[in-house]
Length: 197
Image (cartoon, rainbow, N blue to C red; front, side):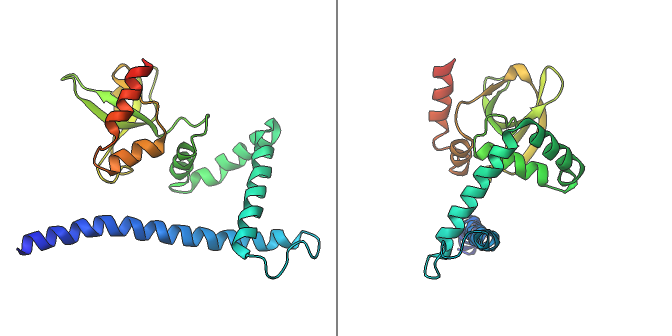
């Protein structure tokens, strides 16, 4: 009986902790958005923002507008090269920055992002193992991460032959959700892959 209760408690914590972390992250992002939005709102003419307007809505609109402006600026060649030069000499040296940037870009399904691509590793015995392709290692190898279920962004990193790795044409969100649900939905993703071959 004690063992059953202990396992139930641990399973409950595995479910509860990610939910709490997502809630805290969203709450913090909203507060950060409001903090960024306040000085931006001060740049607009008086009377454009009314006191009884919902602060969160104004913050969201201003952040989306600012992000759009930054995205347009990033698309121009000189600005992009200057930003990449600055990033390579500063932020890329901050631990976890490159990984988080690649992960966010993969979730947003940006075309130029090559990390965290959903794939399957075909083993010699015919079995398929879900992996993320993190990058390339030479002309004929991939660096892959083998995710652990139900925490799809934790796992071991290995180098696999390119010939044994097949990309799956699904979003990172769909793929990681299937892994979070112990593989439920992964079959549909693999069927998509088979139809595209």
